[in-house]
Length: 439
Image (cartoon, rainbow, N blue to C red; front, side, top):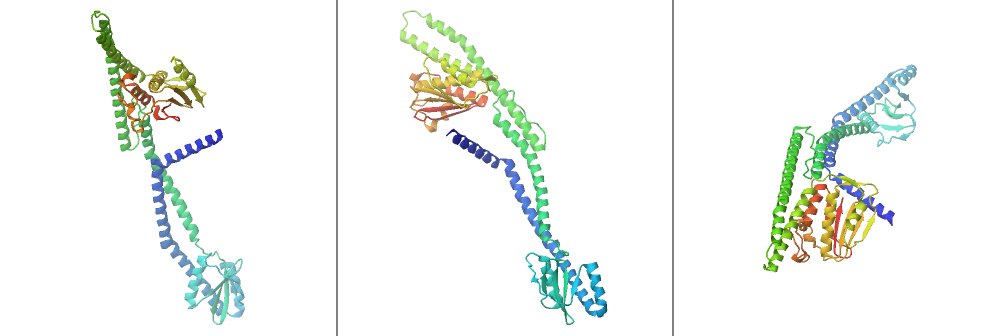
């Protein structure tokens, strides 16, 4: 069963990688340039075949036919005693064999020898009629009717053959290779900086320690990298100033809040107890809001450390009086590098939220995924993104009686974005809510 799941997981990963590669700019650019290069090579091969190879082949076949006819005419005009010496000269210097006694050989298969078909065509034009062509294992024979003789002249079947098929293959292969290598170089030169920009934009979380893009290459890419670096620095400074301002205001509000608590405690005994209770409730709400704001500001600038994930989750669960079951499967055996304070705040907020809305809460750790499951009413699909907005409440699942500042899940979402974690809300297997935190 485990092996089947592993194979299924590997197949899913391979499928995702293929989809990513097929949808990448590098693949699409190479595909476009590759198809265009094949079209160009096909046009070039057709042009060379029509304007160069075919005329050369016809001229070569015509020369070959002229040589055969001239040899036959010379043999006929020579006296019988000189013909033997002429036959020897043709065999030694021109690789031609003349026979005055015709033999029956197998017909020529022109489909495998297009040049021989041209030679037969040129010979037929010179004799104003069909010329018989036959072959043996070593020679091709042309039977020429001349001056009452039927001379058979044998010549090599590969004699002056231009090999048009091989010429086309060489042109197509070499041309396609050159164009493909050139297009690949151009595509890599253009897409590599764009891939780097996409990766940096995806991993940018607004921190001041971001890795700027190298400002090099073509002018357009330099402008893109410079603008991205400027934008990233401005966003980082803006977020840092906002967080600093939020932390400062929240910290400064602690002093007047403490004074107000002291003033409530010093009220005379004849003051309405209900009024005092409302004051205390409002002060507690304000204190919770300020505390959440301080947690958010401190969690966004925390340095990463190496921790063991399973013992860390167990320590978070141990801080609650009510025990909650923990199930671990394929937990990382090596320490995981992350911000422990931010992760503790995220888990604490998720567990507190789950305990408010579900009687049974359990935690499952699957690899680098932490699932917080509860048996509550669940969150409708259309609201699973909106619940991460500040002060958003669901009438069917939350009410003022449950308390809370309305910033719990907003802080979770902000901390996850800052540290590059993924948070997703789904439905539990037996009902309720399944909140998945992927480190």
